[in-house]
Image (tube, rainbow, N blue to C red; front, side):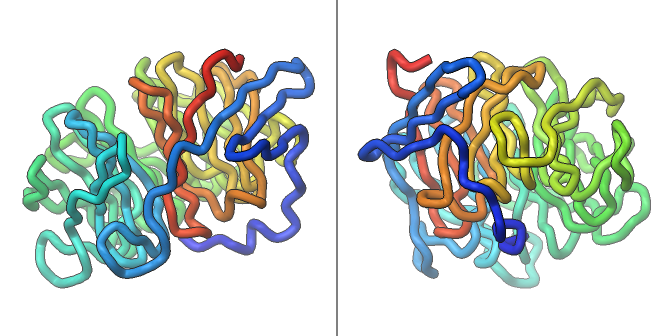
Length: 318
């Protein structure tokens, strides 16, 4: 979703400097540093295979492949996560069952099934591990099981969690497409939302929701019951401005992309701020994010530059 207007007037990130190809991030409150090196960038603006026009969200499969939604082109593009080499793509615009209109959210189930949330049509499409279409469910609308402007999805314990910025809620389906329940609703109170951009499940089954226009992260249990929230509006360390993507590392730390601050902020699983990295010099209009649990590499949808930036944590940094 194009929200470049949220970038205007964004404050410069405190405690961040570029050092060669590295980004040095500093939590000034704790004086703890953590440095990330730019390992590679994948893609560029264009129409060819491996190029993007508005990269959005990510998922990893069990075979070391990175799946990325290419919203404006309507492709899901597949890369080798280690080298960034293009492998294949599927979807694309058209009227067939396998086609897409504007894919944004993506998640891969333990059996290898691939789920893609189509922002424009309201459809969620399910493909097998070989990218063959299997099923379409949900549709554009406001009723139970319908959705309006779906975003970044996740799967946990046989359930798919789908945030809707239009209906300000998270819908929950089983993996056969049956609607189960929804939670959220428009507002600013705990458990309410304003443009939820991501609903990502951690390994414990907690659902972290990027509540974009409320500038916060809300955390729910797997049944949609509110647990706690963190982040306040602003640009200081630990504050958020238009949070979008959410990912988790092997220690359960929470990585959040911020459209309004051109940075990635990192918190522990309880919402305590750890560090931030990036600035408007290297990032523009960030969206999805993923962390490879095996390597700790951070994959960032640098949507304004139509590429995926991959950062590696530097050994010895804290």
